[in-house]
Image (cartoon, rainbow, N blue to C red; front, side):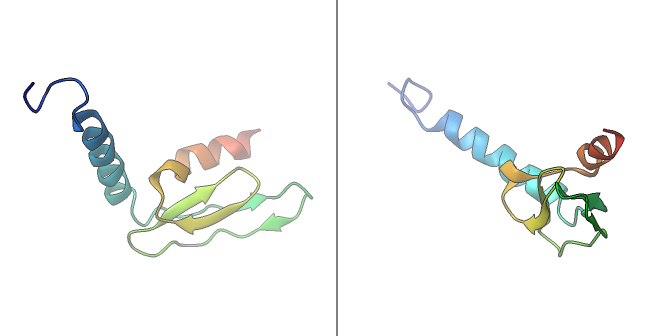
Amino acid sequence: MGPSGPGSGWPLAGTLLVAVAASMVAGGEDCLWYVDRNGSWHPGFDCEYYTFCCGTCHQRYCCRDPLRLLTERQQRHCLAF
């Protein structure tokens, strides 16, 4: 079969391309203030270029892994609940 046949790497390549594009668009995404599981308040902080806010509602850090991305919209949703 040709390059688009079964078993080709195209689906994986497409997924990787989307992940890289998402990380570039979200580069510099900041971490907003949050309250951890112990009830302690943590101030917001900026992430460097090509990194973005990652983690959960109760623990945040800067990273480059688009699968761990926590957008500012998701962070605001955490604050609402």
